[in-house]
Image 1 (cartoon, rainbow, N blue to C red):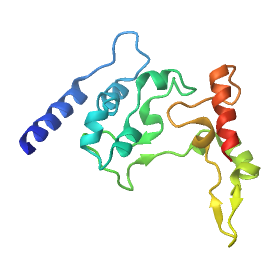
Image 2 (cartoon, one colour; image 1 turned 30 degrees about the vertical axis):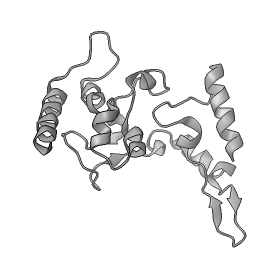
Image 3 (cartoon, rainbow, N blue to C red; image 1 turned 45 degrees about the vertical axis):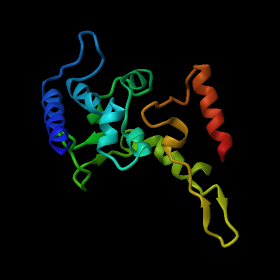
Length: 162
């Protein structure tokens, strides 16, 4: 069983290096390598400790294409992940939204969304302040000025959580 996993890992690594996006695809060549693995729940499940952790690592290419970040490559936000397999270290990571959205980050820092929404009886925050992803999504990023009824519905649904 361990031998089969090792072989499947080698095969996946080779495919990641050789895969190019389909003609007419908006994906960058590096994105195709990312989605080759991160588009497969079963592969992610084998490399995590739980199904929920695996689901958090799966990214659907169609979700990205429908998002406000459809013109960005994976490496625009996720840095240092240029090898397979990759580990999470301090040299690797996901950039903060504020790196590209400085004006919005400044407005957020002085607004109600940066404050803890609810305090418990002992004065500690019971609910942490909202993050960009809480309202706009992670990979399914919704622009605040969207005209999509489904996106507006999601924004409203997420607002009432607080």
